[in-house]
Length: 100
Image (cartoon, rainbow, N blue to C red; front, side):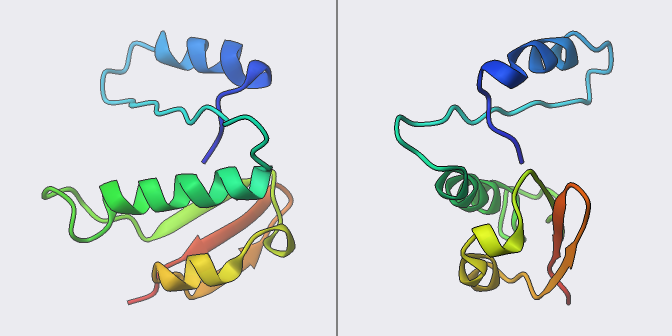
């Protein structure tokens, strides 16, 4: 999960120039006044809508790497409502997993 802002725009442009056609990049522009936690929550719902087990035949995701935010900064209940039940803090943020 990442937001497209000025800090990331050059990096995103470089990723989009990669020769691997299987690499798909989706950006989420920050809305005015939106906090990092609110942005992450919005992205999470969008991601889940498009990649959960009910998506158009796509393999459902079960692991999410969140960079730049800690569990304490987010509403963990949002993750739990979407089926995440295991959380592992890391140097970059945390990993959330949906266990079956």
